Amino acid sequence: MNPVHVGRQSALPSAAAVTLTLCASAAAVAAGDLVSAAAPDAMPDSQWLSYNGTADGQRYANVAQITPENVSELAEHCRIKLDSSGSLHTGLVQLDGTLYLTTARDTIALDASNCAQRWRHRYTPEQAEVFAVNRGVAYANGKLFRGTADGRLLAIDASTGKTIWQQQVGDPLQGEFFSAAPIVWQGLLIIGSAGSDWGVRGRIMAYDQSNGREVWRFNTIPRGKEPGAETWAERGSARYGGGGSWTHYSIDMSTGEVFVPVGNPAPDIVPGHRPGKNLYTDSMVVLDARTGALKWYHQMVSNDGHDLDLGAAPMLYQDSKGRPIAAIGSKNGHLYGVDRETRKRVYDTPIARIENEGVQPTAAGLHVCPGLLGGVEWNGPAYDAKNKAVVVGVVDWCSTITPKPQKDYIPGQFMMGGEFKMDEESFGWVRAIDPDNGTLRWSYKADGPVVAGVTPTAGGVVFTGDMAGNFLVLDSASGKLLKKVATGGAVAGGVISYALGGTQYVASTSGNVSRLTFGVSGSPTLILYKLGGAGSPALAAAAASAAGSEVSGAAIYGKVCSACHGANAEGGVGPSLKGVSARLGLAKTIEWIKNPSAKMPRFYPGLLAEADVAAVAAHVQKY
Image 1 (spheres, rainbow, N blue to C red):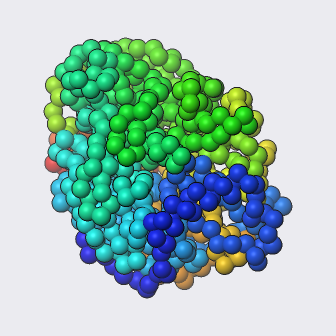
Image 2 (cartoon, rainbow, N blue to C red):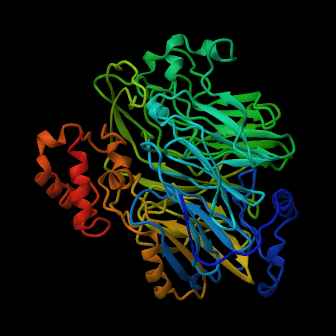
Image 3 (cartoon, rainbow, N blue to C red):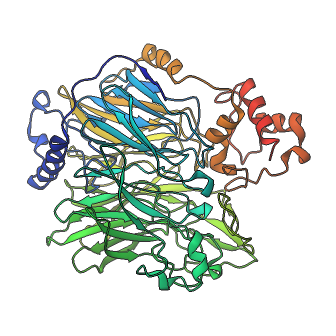
């Protein structure tokens, strides 16, 4: 767990300063595009304080140096390789010129103006990881907080990268892990346990930021006398009901309410196994941030049989009438607007293909749209304050689901309840919606699924990326494509913008192995763009060695293979690898990895070297 130190970073703001900045940023948006009125050389430095920029989740960058008129001058400034391979879903946090981001195990601090690494904290798992992915950090009072794939919670010194405290808060033997980017509020750290597909009993917890002591918890699968327990008609199924939380959260600072997206019930595709509404799965749950008490909830799908999690954090805004609205993007392919006072839906807008919605899957197989990996994933809607629009990225990817009789619950084992096969065709959308009534204003069809962060700016442009490996810049008024840059890797994490020293930067992740449909994976990388950027090959080459390499078959499998074939080779998007030693043997497994079918990404030569292929092939022989 010892960090690697490279250079030093500037002083960080206090927790009070962060809270003031969160509130000030919302006030600036309400007052109009303050930055756009300033000359470029007078543009004040800006921060990106949390996963979605501000506690309300609006993702609006109030910087305006980059516009539709000059975006042709936008170019890569620098890049740094973060790891050799694996999933990269991390959100980005930028404070006083330092970028903070995560891989599944590492927490990294970079100079936000030139990509130089300042320090790297390496976490060594203490138990087997459930699912090797992480979506970022929260910052408060000089500390960074994050979860791990083996059920731990870490507090890291933001200046030095040293561990301040570490607590085991989940049981990976039960399938529990912590992939969400936490959120902070008045001395508390709020995060939920992931692992719905392993049959966990989901919960949301708050911890004392100073020591990691649990302060409160809310069970997303109610039992006994807890409200909602009656919605599990087969009470025994609530023991392993799912309801995990795996992305991020939003907070209404005026009411002290935390808005929590809750995932799917388990087992995923056999709803008859768990009759009832299955609260609080596939729901937005609103809790008192101080106590964890349930304030209210809004369920999107009851007795879900299509694995239609509510994954992304709700986005909070006020419409033109001053109504407080929660914009909620779901894996079911809908964007909802819910009035936070009346708690009723204001609009319900389909934003992806919808087919066989609500139809029970049968043994003959059921074709559904969106599929199990479609709709809105871990990055939800943003608010374009300049054009008064809700902007959201979408995955359009259907699948065929085939239920099978669910075997008895075994702690820590996958509980899909059947099989699914994704369609070969997939693509993505960026869509802008009227915030008052949900009417579609414009759409941009991307080459690949859009799971990356979507960030509108005061300059009139929207930044995002797709799984085909493209960094995208759109005109925020019309959706017109202004710029498309091939990054060399799938874009699946944060895309943010901020100002430092009179220059507007765009920071984007690139390189990811999950949700692949076009074979563009790439090594996990951070890229900075600016007007007139000319690249920095020397820095990129030097930084590539900082991530290190490993020839552990288990580690490589966790990074590269588990996203498709399952953490324990049980299958998922890709086939099960159970019994591969009997079917293929070591030599043929090596050849299969080197020369896969067209449906499988090719990682060799490139992401995997000869030794890597041999190591992972040997590892899968045990299944």
